[in-house]
Amino acid sequence: MDETDHWRNMASAPRDGSRILVTVRSSEQGPAEVDMAYWSRADQFGEEGWRASDSSPGRVVEYAEPELRCWMPLPTAGRASMPRPWEGDDVPLVDGEGI
Image (tube, rainbow, N blue to C red; front, side, top):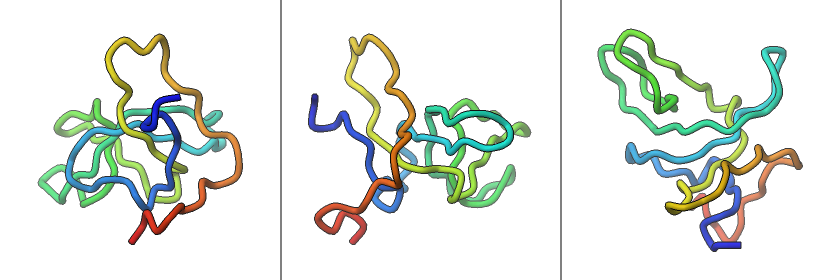
């Protein structure tokens, strides 16, 4: 498995606008799933926070912090399939990632 190919605690996710993969927690709307998201600064369409990358002006899909379980960098080109959502316990912080 590639070094970047593992789920990480959301506390260590980049908040610079770069796109990442996230596991969205299961809810009454459906099972856990993987989505591509990014951190957005507040603008005319919403507040600061996590947004789905396919959001468009006026149709912003925002995620509250508790909805997102973990993240990983985008896979390298040529990956055969999307990773499966994280289904274990919450991903712990490792080696001070959140510092």
